[in-house]
Length: 536
Image 1: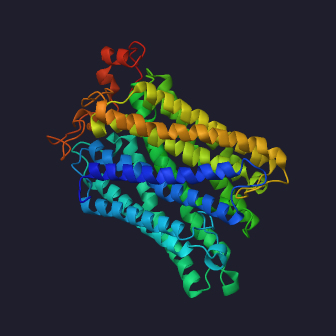
Image 2: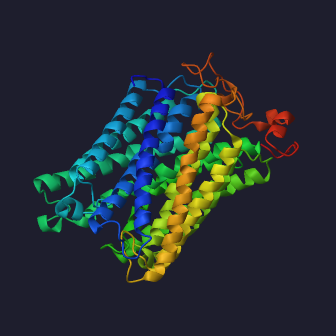
Image 3: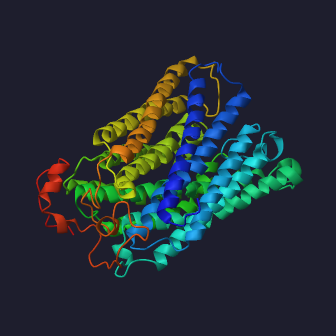
């Protein structure tokens, strides 16, 4: 609890985030259970509001946003750049304590009565009318926001100042590029939402007229400030996952990522454009038509760097020798879910379609495919990839692959019917739909899928924990991967990470150097070696 070792702090985050994930998942299960009946017989409207608010608040602010940066970023970022720790180890520990303190305050607000304004806290409901524990909850989120800011600051300083000799910017792994871009968003965007939350608290407690029309304020101002952060926050959730996927694709295709520079710059491009498109959440507010058109165009443009990544991953696999290990199965799961989420995005970016679909389950399905499907698939894929490095133990490949399949199937059964529900017009946040009983079959399908998905999310806790007790020793490099953390560090790494100063002399993902490793290829069922002349 007092350690300053980035690896141990990552494990503390792993335990904390897993606990919050279970709570958020429990709330989601109760929401889905309620929706199996058109009449909403289990909970009152107020209880249902508090349930989906708790689900959204916990999952967004305490699971998906901190998930990959706090767990995988903390553990592998210094290892991947040849550093002995993060730039500010004490600040790193403080970040974890702020996360825990924020989580305790938010959970206390749930115990004392809950929050009924959703995770978006729209005013004037949150600032003037709600009698729930919003003030206490916002205070907890304010604390958690500082945790995020400090983590981003630590990562940026570490990448700038602590890279190993010879590790130039264009020799850095793509996971580092993704973490760097994510950290910039954290540093620039999180203070805005933190100040916004404080303003809501001031309006609730001191009746300052900032957002509520009754007090002379403007509720649309809140939406501008909230989405200025919260849309880039989507990229805080998905960019780290994209970085993980780049590492997995390179390793298990035994090839340098096709168009490495384009993938690296696309991370920065997504981070930059992400700050210009918040207005697409407000097409039906008081924005002018010109504003809607501009935000619509910018929203469609942000799809370009995302498409660049997907195309380059596909080309990497096309020209590589793909090995179907557990992390790679998660890569295919990620691509499948991200593709569906990405292709449904333009419908919400286009003004005319969004006016029909906004506020419906189509939106719920879309953002779950991106934020949950993409982010959690990346987190699980990365966790299975670096688990042997973190703990020095291998897990069951059978259970790993089976779980990835269960998660993929369960996810699609849960959220794909919600696209249909949204198209049919079912509003989100409703706890009954007796006026449209034909929606029940889709809701039951969705709840059945959520049950399968819940089982899939629980399984890794069992077989990964079992691997710590009876798993085979992993050795320093069980995947035959290229990278400083695999080639120069033990599994688990030494407290100071390395026994010597690492000097980088070769380009990233130089898998040509191990092209003759036939024994490794046979182990993971890879096809025979086929040397790629264009593998640069």
